[in-house]
Image (tube, rainbow, N blue to C red; front, side, top):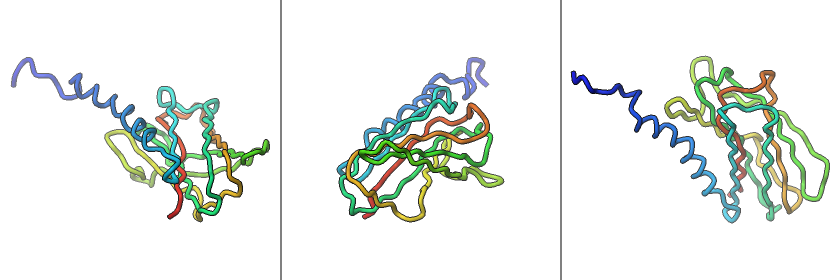
Length: 171
């Protein structure tokens, strides 16, 4: 064995590549979001992989086709250090031209007894979970506002890297 050999986990190149994945995937999602295809997707990062209740991202999107049906997905990326098998989220929505918010609470399953659901890469796991079983029709054209917050008892919520929404037109 060579005396100047470095262990793999100390290789600066590998450490840099691991950090780079936190930037490349969300950038790809941001660049792929496009209204013309009937798709809206926005992901918000948490500082230091910690989601506090004070971080309640506001997502705005425009609906012009009220005759179409849409599917709404919750997007979550977490580390394997996330301590729970589920997450409770609260989604507050406001229709165009209205001031009253509607609030809904969802439980999102993230794991079974022995493994994480979703797709995994190294120590990160991605989930894209359909929030409503049936497709949704928006009643008014215009700009919709949605705010997302976690509704867990633990504060802050460790291990959450990012969260967001995906809204796609049903073809």
